[in-house]
Image (cartoon, rainbow, N blue to C red; front, side):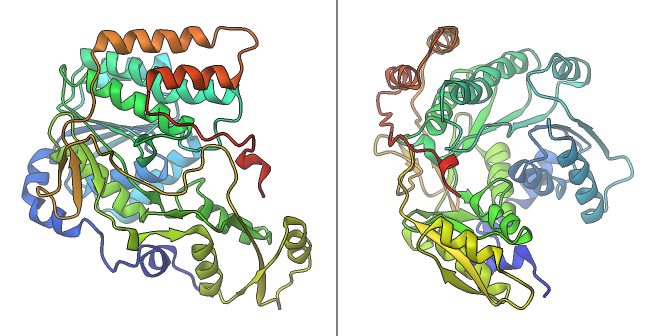
Length: 403
C-alpha cells in the first residue's frame, strides 16, 4: 500500500490542508526575500527534523551560502540528498556540511574563518523529557542546552550576525521537567545577550513524526512488527515539520530583538498520541487490537504475519516523571502581541536577567556537577533556586521503563 507521511500528517494529525502560517508567509514574501536573498546562513543542528525544515523554508528565498553543523553524519548526508532532490538551486549557491559538535574547537575555526554569517540559527538541543533519568543524563542535557549555548553566544558576540535564532520549547512555560527548565534558563541566557546582537526564539508544539518522537517510533515499530504503545491520557498540540521550519524562519527573520514566538493553537487542535496511533494503523489498512498489558501486546505482535489485519496496541495512563498533562505556550505574567501575525503570537516582555547574573548561574551549575556522589534531587533543588516557578513532577518512573 502506498503511504504518504506528509499527507497523513495533514489529514489525520494537524487536519490542515495548507500550512498554518501560509497567510503570514504570503503577506511578508517580499520582506523575507529582501532579508534572506544572497545572505550567508549558518545552521547548527541542521540535520534534525526542525533544523532541516528551517533550511528548506529558507531556501525558497535564495540565500547565497549555507553552512550546516550537526554531529549526525548520516543525517547531514540525507539532508544534502533531500535538498538536491527538492530544489533547483542557483548556479552560485554553496552548501557546506560538517559532522561536528558545535562545542568542538573545529566549529570555532569555521566561525572565525568563514564568518561572520548574516543569519545564524541553533537547533542543537536535548529535547526529550526522558533525558533526566539521573545526574549523568541531566548534566549532559544542561551542558548542551545551556553551557555550550553560552559558549556559542560568546563566540557570536565576536562575530555578530544580523539575525540569531535559538529554538526553545513550550515546556519552558511553567516547567515541570528538567528539559523545560533547561530551556527556560536558555531563554534567560539568550535574552541577556540580546543587548549585544539581535536574538529571537520560539516555543512551539510537538512536531508530528519528528526524529525520535513517539509518532516517529510508530513507524519504527511497524517496520519491526512490534506493538504500538503510548499514553492514552496525554493531549498535545501538533505542527507539521514544514510548519515547524516556517515558524522558526518567521521568528528568526521577522521578530524584534528579544521576541519569543508561539503558534496560535486552541484546545480543539489537541490530540492524544493514542488517537494518532489508531489513525496511523487505519491508514495502513489495520484495525487496532487493544491489549491490557505490554506482555499481551508483545505476544500478539510475535504472531503477526502478512495476512494479519489487526495490529496490537497498548495504551496506558502516563505516570512518568516530568510529564505535563497539558501544554501552554506562555504564562499569565508575560505580555502578548496577538495582532502582528495572523497565526503567531509573540511574547514581548519575557523575563530577563543581567548577563553577570547568568554567568554566575552557569558557574554554579558547572560547579554542582563536580561534586562526587551528586544526586538528582540536588540538581532539581538548584534548578528550583534558579527558576522559582519550576514545579518538578517526580514519580520515580522514567519513560525508559515503558515499551
